[in-house]
Image (cartoon, rainbow, N blue to C red; front, side, top):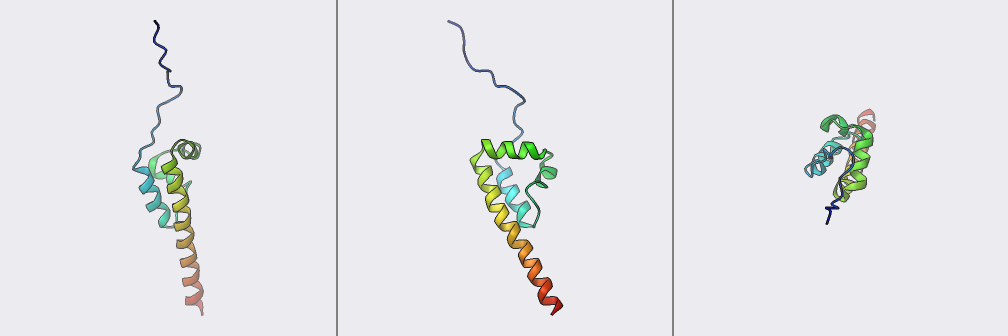
Amino acid sequence: MRDVTPVPLGRPTTYKPEYCQMLIEHMKQGYSFQSFGGVVLAGVRTLYEWIDRNPDFSHAKEVGEVLSRQWWETVALQNIINRS
């Protein structure tokens, strides 16, 4: 009988589970999801592929977006208060 083990197509992923926490920490400082590509040397398309294939990374992006928004709102409010 022939071995019918599927052969993976394309390049192996460069995704690492530790990227989840790294992404949260990155976005917590006000940075965007897309700029995380510069941290891990991955293109934006690759980042979105990781979201599609890794639910934990998708969740980290959702958490990161909330934290990034909070950072920017804090900065904006501080600027308004300082101008008063």
